[in-house]
Length: 385
Image (cartoon, rainbow, N blue to C red):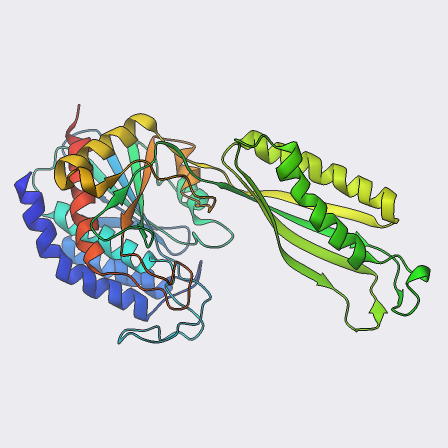
């Protein structure tokens, strides 16, 4: 549809300005008050109806003539990262930064909303989910779902600007696309004592070190080599003095998989290793294990449609279908458990400073590609019977 291309181009300048505004005034998870207000202000200018959800979230909808509702989701939150200023519109909120690209996500989604607000009559409805708290707990997606974000929806499109891809290119994966993320916390209780007399103590630090090294045997010897599994300890807390063996140590870490059976396997063997640790060292242990987010799964039929649409509009060289899933996680996964979803990447220029870096930035040309690609995807999927 040639009109989509024209309307998309007209939205780019405004969308770049919105991105810069969001970047300059970032807000942490579940604190996106000013961000939400700006989104609602822009929707008002387009005459698009909306409601608040999940505290700071926004659900907007352009109602069309048909019964089908096609959805588009954009996340809103920034990260607790202190930006190394290099931009005229660098963060003014000290210690908070849009270091992942969510500023561009909101701007692109608003650009798409602007495009479709000008197409009348629209043969289907489009719902825009502006979701808080993708980066932190409590996750925003389950709360948006609880407040009706997916009600009556045929399918949902998600996206991420991606520093691993050149601007003007896209990556679409069918099936599992991002890993699940579990979180574990382990308390290892020993017997404190003097560092000069370790034989009188039960050292939880030595036990912790042994346990951490043994964790990797789950990956190398208990898991099938063809099944991805990552187990990482990200935090260790123990002791207050250089010459004192502490009473206890605490370990916090994550398990990442692309298959729920792998999550169960990891949890099972962590428990077994802890029992062996107790028997071998004399410590006592306590485990807290919780699922954080499930695997993000792209519906195969919907993903094939997205690939075809991108190929038709941008050409074969622009569309990557051979990229591998990432072991990073996304709470978009909660949507993909309920309705057909496709989550794909939009290239924002390769850089040595990747997402979550204090010096992360993006090529703003990706905003135009984002608006145009998503407008075409929503239009063609919505128009199909």
